[in-house]
Length: 196
Image 1 (cartoon, rainbow, N blue to C red):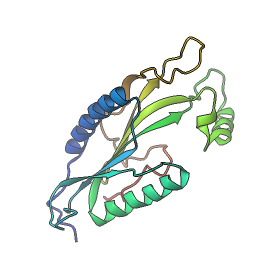
Image 2 (cartoon, one colour; image 1 turned 180 degrees about the horizontal axis):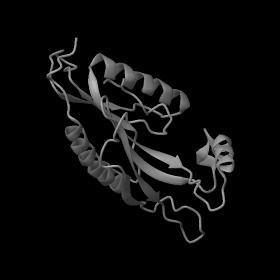
Image 3 (cartoon, helix red, strand yellow; image 1 turned 90 degrees about the vertical axis):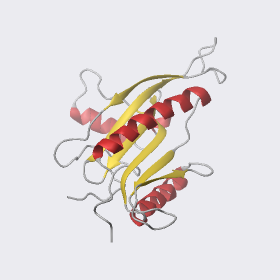
Image 4 (cartoon, rainbow, N blue to C red; image 1 turned 120 degrees about the horizontal axis):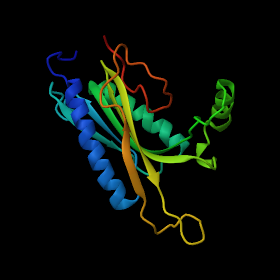
């Protein structure tokens, strides 16, 4: 049974998210990429089992193909439950599409979403980003994305030796009011059970 007196507040988790955004930016700009990584904010020490606030890093080992993503997601969820995590921060590169073009109807947007789900990486107008999601078991989740700009060479093709640039972080600086529900889907969202 969890010790209710040991917990991470939403303010502490948001402060950690800010620190990890700064760190993720430095890593990405230095290396040109960022491997996926998760941090669990637990209330049970993974080594001793004692009731205390700890941060546990869950790195990705090896490749991060579709089957690996599913296994990694299950591992993180299992560890979060076992070590009584109340917060999770997940950092990864990602692709997204913008459906905000003028004149698109809701039906056209839904058709485009359905058409490209699972293979956005192949879309000619995809947007690359660095993402940080932050989840708290009582307050829901927030997400920040910094757009990646990769340089082109003289031939107009992506320059493999060029250093990418990273736009400013865009997202929320607070957890949503109410029940914290957002329109987000994926294996790396809602990693923690929500509590009242």
